[in-house]
Image 1: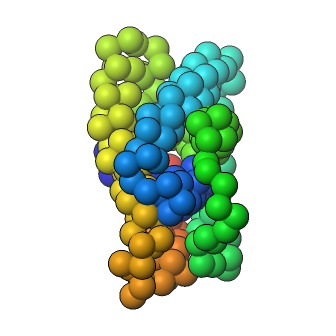
Image 2: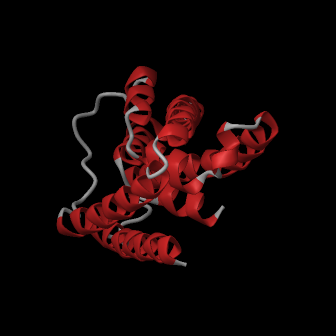
Image 3: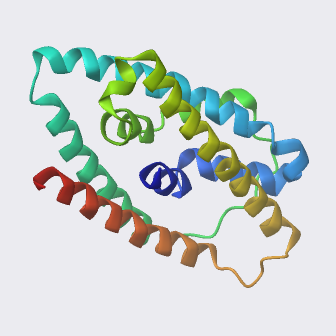
Length: 189
């Protein structure tokens, strides 16, 4: 649960779109996008999970390789986020559409991280384990997605003038770096 929470809270393409939707449309109108985010992740995580589970039977090195690549990817994201921390853009004023958010989530690299590292491998071999894992994922994703929307709406209303979006991204970068180290540590222990 901690791994899911940390990864879902990190700024990325989907969360940036959710915050931008909250900024431009308000919480009430943008709230439906949390369901679209869930749909995109369910499709992507399920596809990656099934692929990795079946491929691991013939490629026994694949699960360890995916964990190593995931650690490196998270470390890369941490460094990139630190270097490119910027203020959330407030223009253009176009609305974030359902299709845009779904495709961004479907292609979000976090899905392979969830499928190959954070979800138990049994989730893609057993239906009840899959439903349990997806239930936990859903219970965490919906409030986190809504929080990103609310964050964007609060920025747009001027209620969070004291929060630096750059500072938030830098703190998130540190959390990502720590998560990468903990994943790497689990590879050796």
